[in-house]
Amino acid sequence: MSYISALISSFRSEEEGQGLAEYALILALIAIVAIVALIFLGSQVSKILSTVGSSV
Image (tube, rainbow, N blue to C red):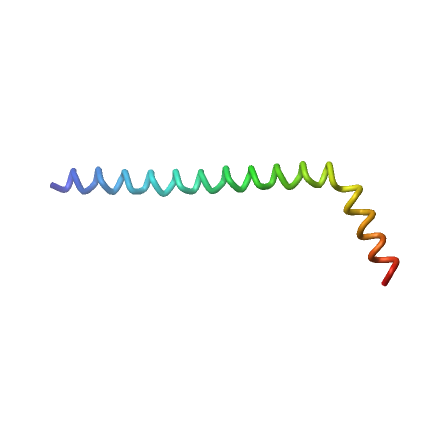
């Protein structure tokens, strides 16, 4: 009986690690999207911030 409970607990710990890996992949995807957006929209954002800064 203890073998079965040990087997079940090992599956639970693997699921937690899998969930952590999924969160890490989502975080990496969000970071990549943010970097790409800043590369393509960086000059436009800079112009807007300069306009706001000069009007203040």
